[in-house]
Image (tube, rainbow over all chains, first blue to last red):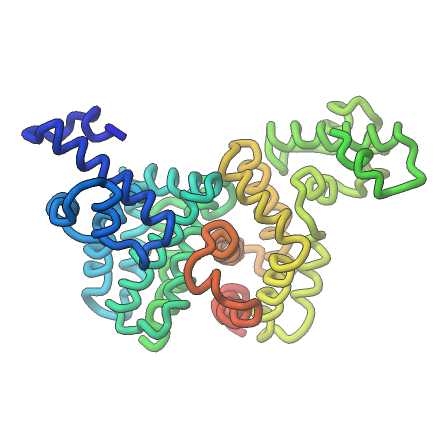
Length: 200
Length: 200
């Protein structure tokens, strides 16, 4: 559990603090896996790691951020949602498609595909990714769009993107795998737009 | 490779014929994986299995059927496509959603989810499933709909269904996992309809 220490990318942090961070992360994975995202509390995670809850908050900021790090999701979904929601509602599908395809094709893509593969292979990884997509992305996105009563449409958006990522980066077959990034954005945008803003 | 013999479910076939069938299937998997669906020929598969091409046709009927058996896909997609395409074009999305959700929730679901999981774990299984979805389902469906110039839309249909299956049966989280079969059909149908028949 010493990935971050070994990478040595961040300086000025004592090894002790780094170890504690990793222990909190390991405890968070256990607690999230045991009862799911909703039931997990900072207090329970702190207890499992044998540290004070305030330290968990100091290191990770919030349950949302801790969950993202525990799952290994590469970008902050709250920031992404805020950026995509801002602007002309008629451009929602296009902005989401451009953001997601950019993430897939950039540095974050490897991490996302690895999470999908792991979910296919391990029950615990599947549970973590499923909880994260639901509570870390779909629910906040529905709230930001003011359509929290229709989380199902947002779940279809998530499923559409998951399926395209699986087809393009795991199966690597057919027109969705052969399309360049711009073509893929153009193909995805209209369907996403109708799911995100059926009335816009 | 003696799965069918061991199961003993079919009678009246000599063990020799059953072994040969399995040898042809194994040869087909190798040839399809090596060069993909388009490049594979019955002649090459027969040569790899050390049998006459006529025997391959006698056992499996066609390259399409052999491919389906080699991949382990549980139903005949040509038959399914014909059934879904027949009828009011305005009901295409609903008919597809009902057929697919029925397959998932019925006996065929286990096989389909196993294929998705295997594709996430093994390069060769991913290639086989990718080729099958493209050449065994998406392309014939586009032809049946008379929209073979727009295979990309059909690939988005395939990706949407793949993503929903992954969310519901692998991740098992969120509204798509919690919905009953009828709710899932109702949620899927409108988006599928727009992809299948944008002008209907």
